Amino acid sequence: MLGHVENFHNAFEGSNFSPGYLALAFYQGFWAYSGWNYLNFLVEEMKNPGRNLPLAIGIALTLVTGLYMLTNIAYLAVLSPFEMLATGSGSSAVAVVFAKRAMPWISVLMPVFVGASVFGSING
Image 1 (cartoon, rainbow, N blue to C red):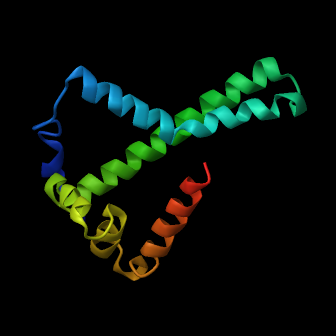
Image 2: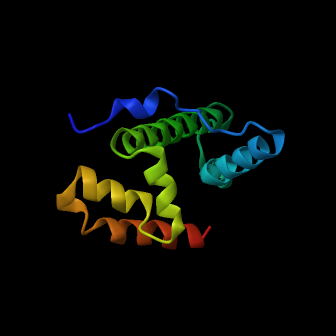
């Protein structure tokens, strides 16, 4: 196995649980999941929107939350928290470092994927 489970033993060590940081974390989480809001524009074209809109929001939020959690688990299995923090100091993105270590065959394409993600977030 390629991962390191020691990164999961004290996962919250060094964390700050002040109300300001928690509020900032929730705000950033709402921004990351803002796609659920776009479902409201499709209500006129839905059949049975009273049932289908809440169902679509619930399914989408569950899938996105699961995907984010699996991504972070994969990052922590390959990189230490300190390596992840070091990527914010001007070097490569976390996804690029992760790809170089876990999947060297795709590490050439990872900057393209990161750029596409950034380009997509500029629009909305």
